Image (cartoon, rainbow, N blue to C red; front, side, top):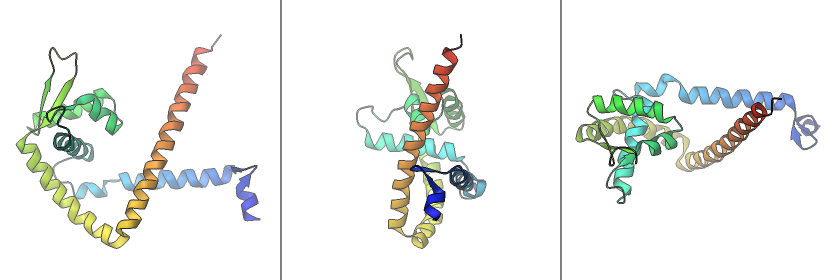
Amino acid sequence: MEQKETWVKGELAESEIGKLSHELTYHKYLFNNDRILSFLKKLSIPEYLALHLIQETELADDIYAGRTYLKDIADKMQRTVRQTSRMVKALQERGLVSWSHDGDGSEGTYVTITDTGRRLLEEEEAALKKYYGKVIASYGRENLIQLLQLMKQLETVISTESEELEGTAIEEQGTDE
């Protein structure tokens, strides 16, 4: 009987969609709240993620000789190039990255991590490892891996739906007659 109330012609009922939407939003809020900032002492979460991405690219990619292009950072962090540019400029001003460009700059600008940036990233990672080591030990490694895989699948679906809604909105704007 419960299932009949939840499913209407193979789809979720409005009330169930509302409850699930709220739970997703609530848990996104919990993960994004400032509690994690107490473990990062000298970087914001986006700055930490950007430095980690830059270092990871440097270590894994021989093709670009340690260069991480601004567009790649923006794409991976799902931010605009303008937002990413402001963040990288702040990191550069603090001496954590070096920012340069190919040729006249039209081929792209890239970032490399400095020794100062590398040391700061190591400090911040040590604090996160200490905290998350305890979390993983309590929650379980396999549980966490499964959760991360499910979150990645969910993010893919959310991104796809978002892009489709944006496309529909653009089409609707173009059909005003």
